[in-house]
Image: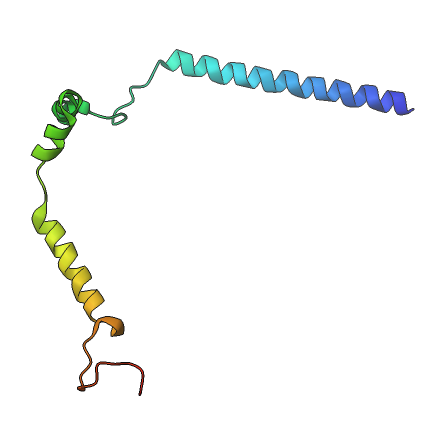
Length: 104
């Protein structure tokens, strides 16, 4: 009885695998019949960075030095950080004449 149940289970598993393989083959055949679809919009267009890369490869230090610095943006970042830090209690100047924190 147990042997018959085991044989039935194996047979059903094999039938399931056969059906799965048939479905996968059918899907693959359908895809191949449709042909390869173009992959528009994928990948990187390296034309914009190619001159920069070649300059860095030839002379790294000169390329880094010649790089355009976004000073206005960096200056705004520094100003905002300075304003934020200056509002912290540790960096504020004492308002009364006493500069020592400890009484004594």
